[in-house]
Length: 297
Image (cartoon, rainbow, N blue to C red; front, side, top):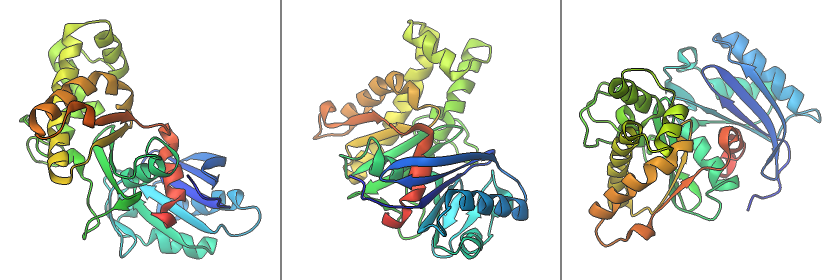
């Protein structure tokens, strides 16, 4: 259950848009969505302006910010952010904290979404799980005993770059990353290569649900590779619950069976019913809500 809180501000900072909201008792009670200004001064000014609009009674008790990229938690700044390069090595948290007169916590966006599901979504009754985002890439966030697990270097949860039984090249430069075959974009690419035309993931899923064998083959391949990666997580950490969000989350019904088949074959000592592959519940609000609860992570 979420604890009563007042005037918490969550910020989901993306490469195209920024979502900001005031969160009380696990609900977004006021929100804004604004375009991302790809300029340090303009972006900071826009953030401060909208935080003030969300805090009519004075400074908020805390601001949490989730953003894509690798975050140095000790220095509270991004060290790699391909979609937001102007924020790399910028003391964004310090600048925002000074301007808004309150503590600011910066975190990776997949971790923030995982925390949102843990506090307010599909993970409420699951203290230990892996949250997976299937979008342009594949991200991950680990929740242990209800809290985020970062690892000693702060980079735990890079689920999309586990090596699976496929030889496609990933955008990171390595071969065989899960992201290269099971992200929403990768599934669309695979479909285009096999079908000879571009097909949006939603249309591909509709065709597969109607029994189209070529469409089903795409999800069979991606699902088996997903199961391969989940197997590695299970064998190492004995996790049994996996939550799925992002643009590819709505096709989980097509990925679940092939993924579970691989889990059953490779995770000895466990039965298929031991595993739960669940859809996330918060949708686009996961990052905003998770950011608001970073102080409790």
